Image 1 (cartoon, rainbow, N blue to C red):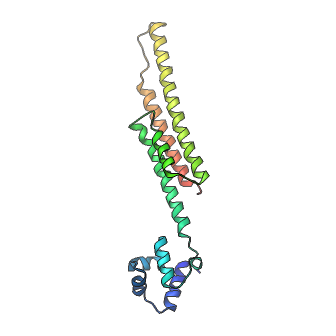
Image 2 (tube, rainbow, N blue to C red; image 1 turned 60 degrees about the vertical axis):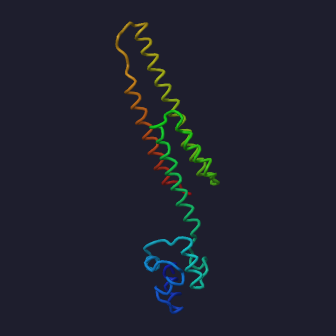
Image 3 (cartoon, rainbow, N blue to C red; image 1 turned 90 degrees about the vertical axis):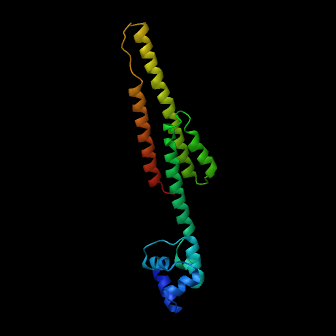
Amino acid sequence: MDPNEKIIAQRKAKGLTQEELAALTRVNLRTIQRIESGESKPRPFTIKAIANALDLGLTNLRIQPLATNDQENTTHFLQLFCISCFSYLIIPYVHFLIPNYLLKLRKEQNPEVRNFAKKVIREQVYWVVATMLVFLIILLINFIARYELHTPHYISYLIPFFGMYALNILLILNSMNKARALPV
C-alpha cells in the first residue's frame, strides 16, 4: 500500500475528514488533498504532523523525508556550485576561488559529492592555465612574426579569447549535466 493510501485509510478509520485532518495537523487543506491524491511529496514537517495526528509511525508510511530532502539539497547545491563557475565572466583567472569557497562553506561529508566538486574546481584551474598558455603562445608567435620574420601581420587575441571562453561554457554545462545525474 502506498503512503498516500495508508494516510487515507487511517484518516477514514479514525473518522476524520480532510478538513479535520488539516486542522489537527495545522496543514493547508489543499496540501492534504495533494498528498492523499499523490500529486505532491510532503515535507518532513508535514509527514511528522500527519503521522502524529493519525497515530502512524514514519516507518509505516515508508517515507524518508530527510533522505529525499538531503538528496534534493545536494543536487541543488551541485547545480549552484557549477553555476558559480560562470563567475569567470566577471573575475577571470581567479574565479575558481568562488566555488572553492562554496565547497568549504558547505562542509560536504559525502565523498562522492566532494570529489565531484573538487574535479569541477580542477577543471576550472586547468582552463585558466590553458588560457594563459594560449595567450603566451600567441604572444610568442606575434613576437617572432615581428622581429624575426619582419611581417606586419599579427594574430589577434580576440579569436582565442572568445574560443577559450566558449570552451569554458561547454565545460560548465557538461559539469551541470553530470551533477544532475550524480547519484547522491
